[in-house]
Image (cartoon, rainbow, N blue to C red; front, side, top):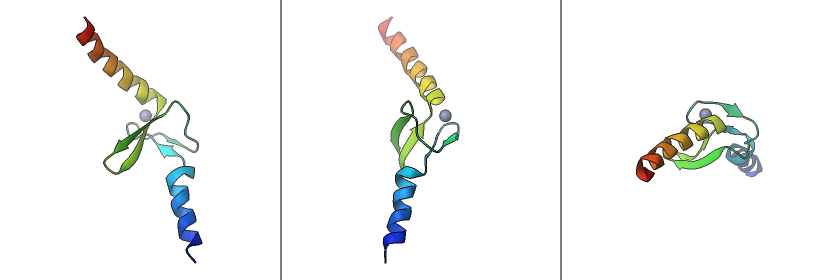
Length: 67
Ligand SMILES: [Zn+2]
């Protein structure tokens, strides 16, 4: 009886793909280079481009610490 609901929940959870929370890019299959983070409403994804921007922002801060 609940099979249909459970199946839909499962699809929404994993199989539907992902949306980048930063630029809104949608993919059917989440690439390994995407970053998963936990946001206010649950898991959020960052695409590789936005991950790279995030990393360089972090590296910039690290540079300030290191130098
Ligand atoms: Zn993005």
